[in-house]
Amino acid sequence: MKKVLEKENLVLLFSTLVLGIIVGISSLLLSLLLDVVERVFLSFQESASYPASLAVSPIHRVISVFIGGIIAAVIWWKIRPAKRSTTTIAQALDGQKMAPFQTIIHVMNQIFYVGTGGSVGRELAPREAGSMFAQGWTGFLKKWHLELTAENKKLLIAAAAGAGFAGVYSAPLTGMLFCVEILLKKVTKKTVIVSLTMSSIAMVIGTIVKGIGPYYIVGKQRFSFMILFAVIVVAPICGFIGAIFRKSFKWAEKNQTRDKKILWQLPIAGLLTGVIAAFFPQIMGNGRALAQLSIDTISYKILGVILLGAFLKAIITVITIKNGAAGGTLTPSISIGAVIGTIIGVIFHSFFISIPIWQFSLLGACSLLAASQQAPLMALMMIIEICHLNYSAILPLGVGVSLAIIVSKLALKDK
Image (cartoon, rainbow, N blue to C red; front, top):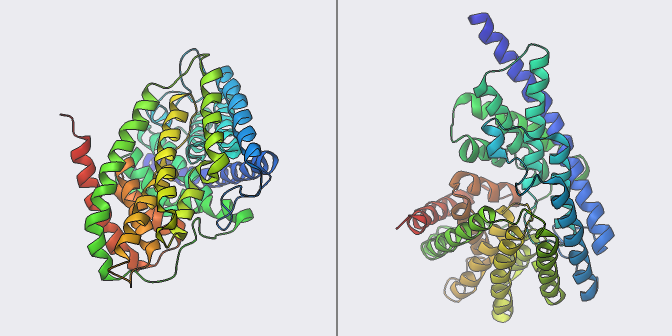
C-alpha cells in the first residue's frame, strides 16, 4: 500500500509540472491570439496604459463588434451540440468529457469575440482550456497504466483551470484560490501545493512575451487606517449590487440561447455594444478600460458618464451571455465595482483629502468581485496581485470583502 501511495504521489507531482507547462503555453497563445484579433479588428494593442481603442473612428468600433458577433455566433452554432452548451469546468469535474476539438474552438471563439469588442470577460477561456488539457492528460496516463484516483484527477482538472487564469493574468495565488475556494471548496496541503505549483509555472510561461506588469495602473500611496471609514459605506453597497449582478448573469447562463436563434441574437448584442462604444469605447471588451478610467478619475466632471457606463456594462454583459456568448464575469465585476468606489471616493474626498480616490476604486472593485463570485479570498488576492499592491491593502480590502460577502449572502438568500 505504501508503494502504491508513493507511486501515486510521484505521478501527481509529475503531472503537476507537465500541466503547468502545457497550461502556461496555452495561456500564452490565447494572449497572443487576443493581441492579433485586436490589431486586425480594432487597430490597437491593448495594454494597462492603453486599454481602449480610442484612436479608431466610432463607426469602426460598431463594425468591429457587429462583425465579431456574426462570426462568433456562426461558430458557436456549429460547434455546440443540439440545444446544449459545451462541457463546462464544473461538468468536467463531475466526470463529463470535454471534447478536445470542440473545446479548443469554443475557447478561441471566446477570445476572438472579446478581441473584436464583445462585452464579456475573457478569463473563462484559459480556465476551460486548462481543464481540457488536464482531463486529456489523465486519459493519457491511464493508457500507460498510471491511472490516478478520482480525487487526484479532479484536483488536476481544477488546478489546471486556476493555472489557466494565472497564466493570463500573472496571478498564481489567485489561480490557486480559484481552484481550492471556488472549484474544489477544499483546502488541504495537497490541493494548495498542487494548484499553487501549477499556477506558478503557468504564470512564468505566460509572462514570457507580455512581462510581469500590473494589469491596472494604480497609485503608489500606502493604504491608511482612514479608509476604514469608507469601507463601511463602499463594501455594503458593492455587496448588494454584486449580488444583483450575480443573479443577473446566473439567470443569463441558465437561459442562454443555444439553438439557431444565436445567429441573430448575438449579432444584436454586438450591435448594441458597438452603438454604445461609438460614444463610450470603454464599454467594449472585458471591462479593463472602464475600470482603468474609473481608477484615473479624480473629479466630479465625469462621474455621471462612468456611472452610466457601469450600468450599461452590466446590462450589455448580461445580454451578451444570454444571447449565446460564453465568457467570464470577473473583470466586468471589477469594472462595475471600480465605478461605484470611485463615485463614493470623489464624495469622500471632500472630507478626507488624504485618501487617494484610486483606493476607493479598488475597494469597490474588490468588494463587488467578492460578492458577484461568492469568493472572498480569491477576490482579495486577485486585486492585490493584478494591481501589484503592497501589504497595507490587506486590512481595508479584507474588511471590505467580509462586509460585501455578508450583505450579498443576505441579498441572495431565498425568500
